[in-house]
Length: 409
Length: 226
Image (cartoon, rainbow over all chains, first blue to last red; front, side, top):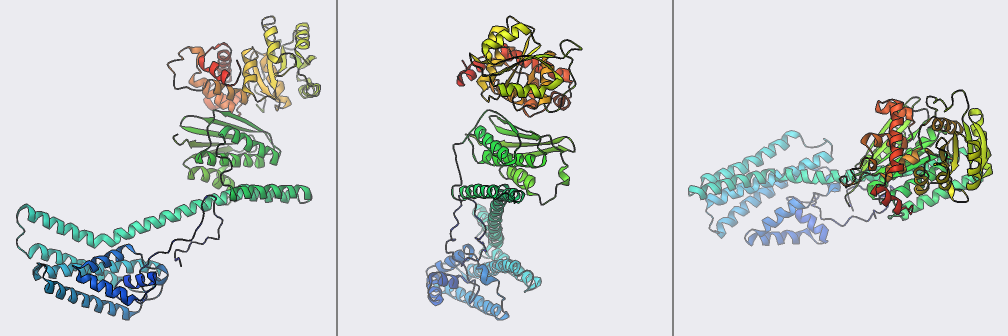
């Protein structure tokens, strides 16, 4: 049902249970009369749209509550994105205009019939504003749909024309209210005029503000997903890809291959089902353990020096993983030379240095697709608010400096 | 300390440094002897505290390579007995121990440096020659322990004794050593001479040995050192 297109096939990072998104109320663009509110509500509730429409009309008679309710639904219920992709017929535009016209006439009649203390001098401008707002808001929908349909469809001109028409109606209405009833004197008059202008502006610009807010939310959502994806990629690289490399080196040794595979399986299971292995772990022991692992796996000596200690929080966990990856990198590319790991825990930050005395390299020469340094070290640190600096030069070895600010206790 | 730094002349020019090995593992002693090769002259070996005192007193070597853990009281016992008697003999602690209390303990008892047993042969030979020449040899691990012991505290006003505090420069030097830099690389990094680096390290050693600083005491107590 969801049209947001989230594929849940990619591996989820631990701790984030993916569940089906809740059923949402969408406005329907298919088979609608005005903005699709009634149709959407009917679909959502599973009843005939006719009842909803009748209910709205009845509510209109109740001092216009129906209009307000309709407007609120229009603002807050997003258009159904799946249906929005369907092409729109010319006829429906005409229907729309007719409906709007009928609605206008009806409102005018209703207002004059009910009286409500409104002279035609006020009622007509009010209706003018209402129709203008209706056109503008509908226009905003059109814009959104236009993006989805990627330039196919209605011309830019008709859109602009409609927007201009809407704005004109609102402005004329507002002016009529300001000019019409001539009792706007003194401070009260000034206040009323200001209120009218502000309301007019708000009504005209509301759809765009709303859309901006929605786009921001969507963008944030996308960014979070991108982060999660990068985290998964980094983990897969750290563990699975390395194991596969090692297995290829040991093709002639079935026992070793089995051992590697088992170890990897265990590791992956831990990661998938027990996301936080040991939240109480301290950074010093965790770094030492990481160094031991790298020593075991690669047969290189790692000299670990840690000054101070701190509980591992999210940021430090990322720093820990990045340090481990830096160690693995050093082990793989430093040609067996000993590696130094130095970490210092200070009140405000934790700094880790991983240094090898291998051949060194130019960072610019590292291919873009080599995930190790960029994703697992630099990217990971930056995603968690830290920094990573790589210093290397041909013949000088490599030093990777990781800095992670400590979250306030 | 991978590459030997600029060679430091031994205490007696023209002669190889005379060394005594003290370690309770015979395999390890022969391993060290083989690794040192011709770089130094191994004049004696011992496997416990009493043996070490006897051999060192008899041979009066330039340098003693001293294991931290020894039957009969450990390296500290050897130091406590011999340092007052033989001021010209220099001790270099050599250990697999990761425990700060062991390492700081031998340094405070008078050792001129500390290296781990993972050190390579050439590095060890270099360290021995440097200690013989009067230098102080800090391994990355020792630098880390010292930084830990002298950790910058919030309470700076409480420790205005010079002995109780590392200067900013000393701290920088120690940090680089802890990161695996040789003295030469430290000098290059900080734009100072190797001699200046050695001066800083010696000053740190002196502070470490002489300071009765509250922090150091507390740090030692935390680690059941006192």
